[in-house]
Image (cartoon, rainbow, N blue to C red; front, top):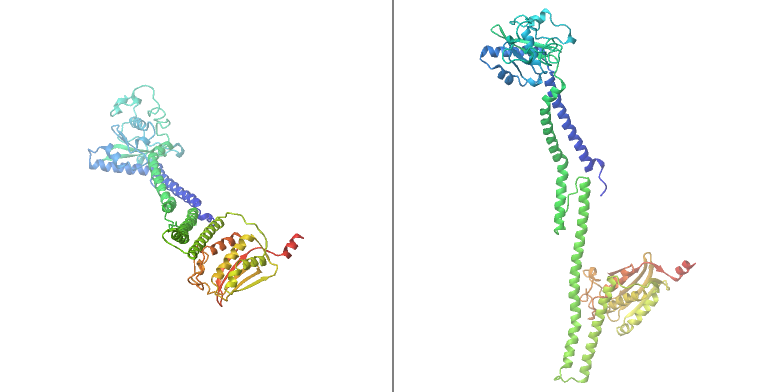
Length: 549
């Protein structure tokens, strides 16, 4: 499977997805911070003068409706949603605010001192110039507060205390932030030095107090104190939402696919070789699923091969047991017959029984030898001694070995080698064994007065050796199994009742494959079977001479 395209890679998907989720969370938090900051700082359409006028009008109406109204509770409940802080001071010296912690330190004391002295609660910002014109006085933003006595510096401070004593009224030197001295006159840190706006609270034409608001925004630390808890909770909520979104949208699909792959691996570990993982996606998980499926296919193939091998082993044991039992049963039966003292056998009968025992013993010995030979060849045991073997000499030894049977059955033997001095690079003893087995098999199925052909020629793939008979041929359904161990098609090729062990063709195939060649079996159109051996690597005297030069 090729490497995934970079934009389909799980690594980049997670990276880009995480960055996108983080950017969205940060953007939302910035928007929330800007919205809250706008409310605190007062970036709204209302000016400070408009705000105090609106609050004063509302308080005036509320007190007109209910003279027994608890002003502190009303201000706290009705105006706590306004983030910009303002102060309310009554003629009896009570002070309250919608956000008392957001006002400058000593602000209430400064207002009380100014009221006690009969000074105006409107203090212009030094940067704005004088604000004590007739228009300001008409609006209530200049001059001494109406209804208050004129300034009297000799009057005892207790007369305007209106309740609890103030630290600035104790007669000693003014303390920092108590509203006296420079702070009371608009220059100290505790007073409204940067400018304030005020509006009267009137009930039935009588002034009951004032609403005062600093013109300038509160300091940064005040805004942070107000925004801190809200921003903290909003940030935590957005972080939780971002984490959940990342888990569901980024890691969720990969997690589900990995879980599917894990389940497939568990099923494969339990022995289910048919399970496969989903390869869709084109990323690293898909590559892993493809590798898993390849491994599962390989394991399935190996499991099938092991099952087939186990089946073949069981079949081999059954076939070997059957093939060994037949001669052993004959040997045992005739031996027991000869050993019976009460049975009087004449000499010819006894000799015939002994010949049968000898034949069965020889057959048993041949069968065991073939089994050992086949096991050695298929297991890779033994070494091949490769040499240049003349083909015509091989055919001559085959003819000598089967000469008596050929003459007895009047079979015509034809030998054709082209070129006449053709040789093959092979183990001469093993190759002769293969040819002897093929010739014996061909003679077993060749009728009397038939013909057996041995031919050899050079081909592009090496040396081709052909053994051909004029028997009934091999039925098509038997051709795929003809080289299997103990497989016999004698019932189909029963020109004679002769039968081998069923291992000869298997030994032929093992010998040829050890030489790197192939052996095939086909039927001729005019009848008979054709066995062809192809051995790679042609060696003739001419080629040897050229190579030595």
